[in-house]
Amino acid sequence: MPPSRALDMEPLSLSSSSPTSSSSPSPTLTSSSAAVHNSASGSPLPLGLTRVQFSFLCGFAFIFLVVFSIALQPHPSSASSSASTSAASVSYRNLLAYGSCTSYSLDPLPIFSLITALSPDLFLWLGDMVYLDDPITECPAESTLPGCTCPNDDWLQIPPYSCNGGQKTPAHQIYSSMLEHSAYYEFMRTMCPGSSLPAGESCESPILGVYDDHDFGANNGNARLPEKDEYKNYYLDAVGVAPDSPRRGAFRPAYHKYTYASGSPSLPRKVDIFFLDERYDRAPLPCHIRRTWCEAVVLLDPTHKKHGWCKDYTENEGSCCRADDEIAAGICLDASNADDPLFGQACDPAHPLYGTEPLAVVDGRLTDEVIGGERRWNSGFCDVLGRAQRDWLVEELAASDAHLKLIVSGSVLLSQPTWEGSEGPCSSDDFDCYAPARNWLIKTLMDSGATSELPIASEANPSCRNPIVLVGDYHFSDFKLIRGGAGKAYADAYATGDRDPADRLLQVMASGMSHETATPHTQCSPDYLVDHAGMRAEAGIEGCGIVSGPNFGTLSLDWEAGRARFSLLGGDPDSEEGGVAQSYLEVDLRRDCEIVASVGSGYPE
Image (cartoon, rainbow, N blue to C red):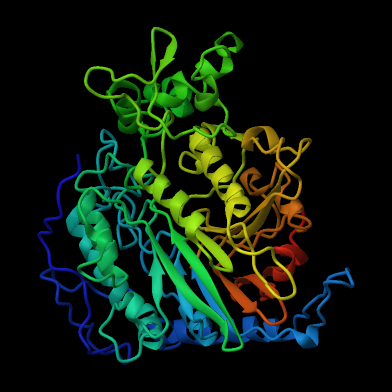
């Protein structure tokens, strides 16, 4: 069980002083830890500029390119005359920005100047605000600096890039450095004028979010992370969550709902934002996902960087999750078990009890009885959210009367269900690794529109009954859409073949906010960038459809015109092309968020 909150360091906060130039001292922290050098204010560059001054000039050019590009971009209208809206009649006012995956070493982050220039009403962190498991400095070859080297015999600390995994002291220092970073500090100060930083929901323009693995404390971190309540509270400190927030309680994930008052006095609208904690109660990786790779490759090479991880994964009790092996990949694949009275709720995502009751396998048969004083698995599958959070989500979605619902997920929900890499299926960390838990969440979100008490979308009631999912993590950005109906490449994997074709779920991924985390691509290569299941095409995106290089996302709303636009803004101002890659979707709120226009990045397939 996780320990109760007993921080051995003071919560992170900034004093009222602010860095006014690259030569100014770093802001004083109230933390007991020593202030860490701000990597944004390094040594002068060849032209006599400091890194901050150089970053400012690059950021200014970046801002000009993107804002100029946005201004020139037309607002396409639907081909349907009954729902068409001319470009002149759309006037986007409400604006939300979101992003994930900053920088391993917190190098200059000019993208925050770009976000600030758009004056968003909210900013949403989609995960990986910082990289706690990475060293905050670039490690020279064969370096012995702290965080730059570690043995390969530990499941948390994996050389050469994750040697700080599960280490609290560098974690606190890295969060301090992020809050002191000149670009991020100025972004916070602009969003939260007059507030003690970080300010969270008390900001004039709130900065909100939930962690993913790297800002939770370890790469691919899960419920096994030691002292996970401390890591949770480090993050909540960094985004300015109040000290008395329920999210800070021991044994409780950091899930949360925030309601954003949108619209206008003549047409007030609400947006409910659900932040999912997909780390605190996440089961370890299912045992079958990497066992073959570990045994056939890694464990045969004592020098392999993941040797310690694979040894723990294959040998230690509780280091991998057996539920999916024994039920989803075992019982459910044997047709002779179909007469078992528990078969439906164990194996069929459409069953009303799927994932709601504890199950186990005894002597080759399913049971919901108590075994040895407790049930083996409390969900019937390897869980990501945990039973308490899943129950909360179902109840809150049913009770929501918001006209638009957003799901913030650090882990990618719609990924590559038909793809397999050299290590095996999935990316080692996305929802595809946890297929039963993934299908429970897809079904829950797609069902929520049918059970909503919100009136059907219309001219008088612009709204969207099904939630829209915002994700980070992959270090590039794209749009994906799934619909009900058979014959689609993803239908069997996602159990959507029997659903009504009108059922749909949209995912917007915005990931990679620096050159360190978002490598620019000019084509869909390597293979993991290709959308093998056709979900970008479902969203109307042609070609590769990704946005690479430093980027972030926005949601713009015009309730009177019944339109919402999801944009992915970014690019690489230092590239030979010097252009700005953009992609956007426009949806009709009067037709339940049906996509009416889409523009991809233009990269070839």
